[in-house]
Structure formats: C-alpha cells, structure tokens
Figure 1 (spheres, rainbow, N blue to C red):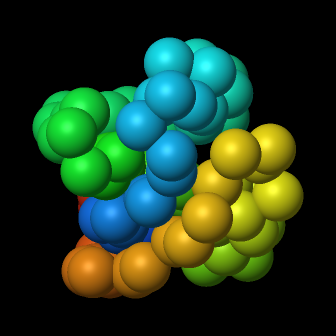
Figure 2: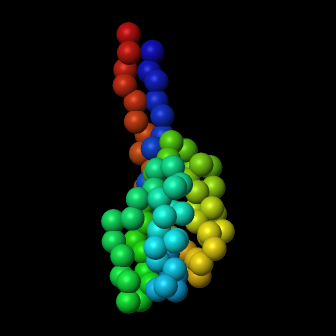
Figure 3: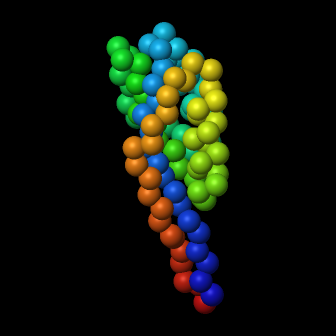
Length: 89
C-alpha cells in the first residue's frame, strides 16, 4: 500500500510600516508552519516562509497574514508543491 501526502511551501514579502514590524512578526509567527527568515527594518519588509500539508490550509494562512493589523501588502514570491509518500507493504 502506498500512502502519500502533499507538502506545500511558499515565500512571501509582507510590507508593514517599520514601527509595526515587531507586532506583525509576532502575529505571523503565531500562524502554524510560519517563520520569518529575513527582515528589512528600514523598509518595513518581512520575508515570510509558510508550509502546510495541503494548498487549502496554505492559502488560508496567507489570507490570515493579510488580515493581521499593520500589514499593508502581501506578495507571493514562490510556491512549491511536492507529493511525498512511502511504499508500505
């Protein structure tokens, strides 16, 4: 029997006012599967990586990011889907 699951990952640029970086970063990191590997404090830009087991969950997370107070814009930079699975007897 083969059991497979999807894995989705995306990267986003999240634009905020520089004074809101801390608050928005904290709210973003509270979303499951979300991390912030880069910040440009001067320009108010966050590089955000999100991952989920399916596209519906991932897109819901992106929409949640858009709804965070202080977020001015969310731009999808990259999305990848990978089917993962293992053959089991």
